[in-house]
Image 1 (tube, rainbow, N blue to C red):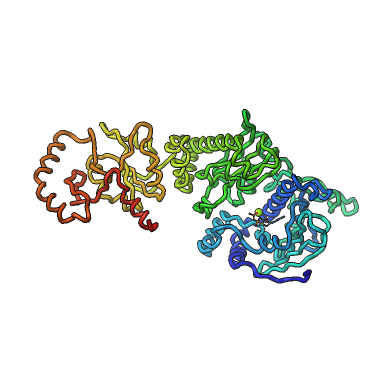
Image 2: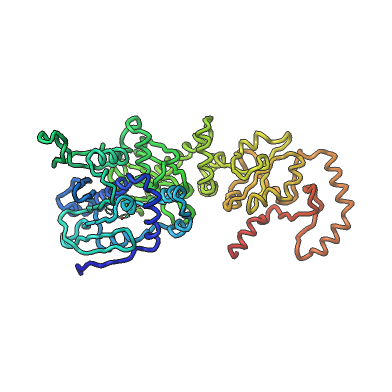
Length: 568
Ligand code: ADP
Ligand code: MG
């Protein structure tokens, strides 16, 4: 069984590798950050597993990462004593991309390096980034708690296949050796590697060590020594005080926890004291992930208890409609052996979730209500990426419904654009004398909404109408019949009551028309007996001769269409 086996990469891996090597080259230093990030994750997982199996520490409890290089062999090695991998895990984790949406992602790549670099960054490529600088990667790894003879060597030139074979390895964990491509020798100095580590990985909570160069009196220059020294600060970033953390460090930490290559949009960092004590460091990404709409998608919060990593994707810590939030929550009160089941029941968790939800909403309000253009732009960017998800909160989070409603943005007849940038407050500030309701129309898309015949009377009267065209709008509106004390009214429903917006003369004219057209309406009702419930004279229209409306209590046209499409 120890024979060397060769296996093919999953098709997506092959494609991704080629594209990544070219498009990320200008940012090649990130390979080291990705390797260190994985080593740190492996340490987190080991510490967690060891909570109830302390023997897997194998008398080597000081978790750390060691970076070394060999000028003659032209290699860089990243070693950790984390959880390690079995052969099956190495095959699965290093030969395939388990992330959902990978296929779709690949089809979106264009071949244009600049555009693709941005896309790839969004996707997060992790381990494979090693191939940007290496033409061969050797991984030697042994899972904690397994015999030294059951370690594995994984090796690949990143071209289409990889090999695995069983080897012997005494030290637990993973050594990753990058055999550098021609021309990458500039990476092979102590100060260069140290510089990269400080820049990208200072926040890693365990020591990252390198052998220190020492002064050589003979050659009057520095030469590699054997004494290890720690390069990073090696303390959990979220446990430091805000004033000790730079924006750059916050950003790099984000990339580590989110597996995103891009900077975050914004973040919030707080220590919460009171009935339950915890620290939260929560980020809003710049871009929606590919699997934002995946209903089974796990959350983006890592749970720690007193600095010990407990689990990724602790979905109980954030409501579903904030599933795009990434970051860390570190509780002082939860038990270390907390399971997903316990999390579901825990009152502490409930309080943490509520507190974190409020934090995220305040963070968004800060952008949404800011005077600075930069923050306003950031909110627009946020809304563009995540607005539709936030709208789910109207139905999901009754307690914060009003705050969420204030954060919503719509397109509207006031602006001639499909950009959603009108808030309820904007709308109210422009309401006509005598108008007491908020009018909206729902439609499948912006063009359909904008050209809806239902809008004619509103145009004539200069009354603004919100154009609701997101899939979630109908559902959202079923939970939102009012904003503050103003009723939300669909312009397509029932006998439209424009209230005091109508003047006496118009009312009289309308009544006269109704009498005049009584016969015509009667005939039409007969003809349309099976198609229409009722035929009415309307004052809604100015240009179109007729339009379809639904009764107040009936499903709206758009929702009917959606249900039909869904086969209901
Ligand atoms: P991600 O970190 O987003 O999961 P990566 O491509 O960086 O994706 O890594 C893929 C997987 O390979 C990891 O999820 C992990 O299971 C495994 N892996 C990579 N490096 C290590 C390591 N040093 N120790 C243990 N497992 C590792
Ligand atoms: Mg990774």
